[in-house]
Image (cartoon, rainbow over all chains, first blue to last red; front, side):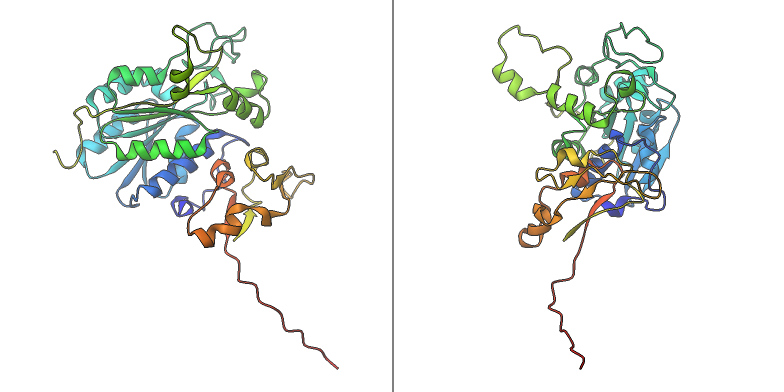
Length: 263
Length: 90
């Protein structure tokens, strides 16, 4: 049961009304429960940010670490005791901005971690500053005339750096997301699941997605299934503006580190 | 099985009104004690999970509980229906 993993004395949590992080927490707990993990040998880690408050609401051992260094701490946990199941919650500010180097090297070493990146395109907790994943033309407090830089594509980065399982879903696709997290937990080696989610308070308010529903509609209409796109797209055809691919991007069996049987 | 919205957790984002295929949730129109417009249940006995979970032995659908960011939606077990004996007092 998913409810058994929640710390009921800490709820309701501090996320804003309609924040996607709570949805992603539900899906991850559902997947962890389906994978049959025990509460005593599961560790949740997080860095700093809205997303990183999630382990505080889960009744297991957890580490709330410094900004961007969640993967470094997770590497330590996994190497010290490879029998533990380690799940990392990070945000885009953690994994793409300050912890970028930790991220690519965790992918390169292929440590047996499951990383769930809650990508809300903005630094939500500190007041809506532009992050490396803010799309071009979107407003934030540090990009008042629209962001001009090309955003990071975390999925491509992880595939290039050598992760074993990479998928991208949104907070609208809850069943597919649960399935992807379950696959990530069962794949040995580094698995990244990027989840695009809504931030109605900091991102939506400045970008004409004032209600949580508006951004959910955007996610539903602009998410293009990868398999369908590869089947139907003409050669050289570009994705429509603001659309993005969702689905399972890579699943392979490169040599891994930190699996209990091999050490 | 019966659907239940936990009023102490719900923050009134109305995401459940968007995803339910049976449109069981309706936007609330009366603020509760904390000033939050909690969605109302519109004929919740239509819910597929409420009707058929016992029969199938697994969770069906369940999108509303998964998408609820505040973990406010859950199913509670109901007692089986018992016909009441009416005692007539003379």
